[in-house]
Amino acid sequence: MKKALSVLTVSAMAVSMLAGCGSSSSAPAASTAAAQETTAAAATTEAAKEETTAAAAATTAANAAAAQDVDLSDKKVGVCIYQFSDNFMTLFRGELQSYLESLGFKPENIEIVDGANDQATQTNQIQNFITSGVDVLIINPVNSSSAATITDMVQQAGIPLVYINREPDKDEEKRWEDNNWDVTYVGCDARQSGTFQGEIIAELPDKGDINGDGKVSYIMIEGDPENIDAQYRTEYSVKALTDAGIKVEELDDQVGNWDQAQAQSLVANSLAQHGKDIEVVFCNNDAMALGAKQAIEAAGETIGKDVYLVGVDALQEACENVKDGSQTGTVFNDHISQSHSAADAAVNYIKGAGNPHYIGCDYVKVTKDNVDDILASLG
Ligand code: BGC
Image (tube, rainbow, N blue to C red; front, side):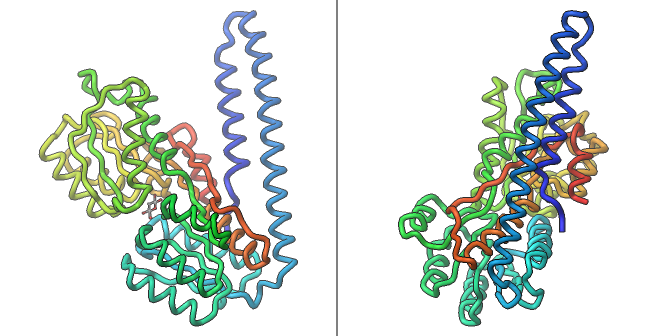
């Protein structure tokens, strides 16, 4: 089981703030001002750090109290994953399993099933969990648009429900609120991940305009378009560029369904058509960025010189590529904090403590500058 990243993020911020302040100290007056600024920044950072640490301690204490109040050793949790072969959901479910065990659930009382990317299969699995009498369900829906049907089934059986990773729409979330149902969603706001992708490009020295023609020519490789993460990342990555005053030109937009092999062949086709005109390849996730990297290298191009490449998730392999420059950047999709929050929410329901209907989490921008911290937190 891994530790959540919040404290680490704050200390990484402290290091970069201090480094930033230190480098501006050439003239004596400037250096005094810089020193004062540094001290103030350090104090603010320290306060933020203490707050974060205190919040983490409070959460741990609350979890421990929750776990003590109620004996979890005979409680059963059913977990539905949309597809086991998804790289990101594999990390998520591994962490969820070990964290649930650390809270006191017995391994034999945690059942995790593979929806095989088929909603009918998953709906059957949910029905089976209801019949077998689980105490709580954690569901990563195959189709978020099926959430209303799923909620109705689970709600009528009187079982609390925690949705993860694929966010149901606002109307559905409003129903939980209006009816005061024990249903919640745990996840991050995908708009933030898209924005971070665009910012990684906008913050490069040439702002993504490798050929200097005054615009960034990009291709977009999308995840499953039914998924709000794919929709928002597609929109907000480009929006971050235009918001920064950068002109853009879309050369291609294809659906790679979160999948490495599909992305590899899509990017190969696109490169065959557009060649060196492509300056940026945006991939909605890292699995697809790994496929894009294979296609780019097979076409004889060098990432970082001929083309930039960004993904989302911070898979270990993608982070290693960021470290050696063969992927420009990624965005950490914090499966550790999301899986822990989902398990904590499940425990709160079992305990009768309730939960807010939306439990969020922050993404983290990942470039060469902080990739070592991220790799360390991935363990
Ligand atoms: C992740 C993808 C994953 C998808 C599954 C997204 O949040 O970034 O890697 O395939 O969730 O729903």
